[in-house]
Image 1 (cartoon, rainbow, N blue to C red):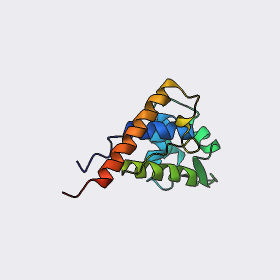
Image 2: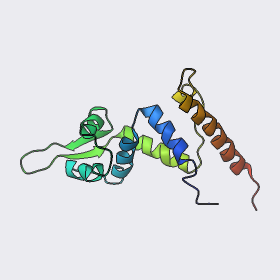
Image 3: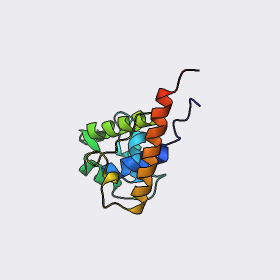
Length: 144
């Protein structure tokens, strides 16, 4: 099937959350804001209102470098923000993986492959290995 982009979404999502220390809601916000370009705090709050309640999310994402100030609030002008270069790279990485790029399995690139990880991370490790094998097999399949 050509349109199975989301087949491994759960595995990719878990990898991104573990690697970058993001919550599911943080990731959802960054994916939403990725196409917004510049946005106000009101636009952020509009999407944030449908997520689990976290009054500190905006400030935390700003502090941790996931979003950055484009224009400071002054007078009648609202402050404008944008997602950072770091966040754009993470979103691009997600889309590449959804489009069939293999997931890293080295300890240096994937903290889920460290020795002392949770049982859940060990289960996801196996899923990553299976996903990579399926990607390789699809890539080497003869044209029909």
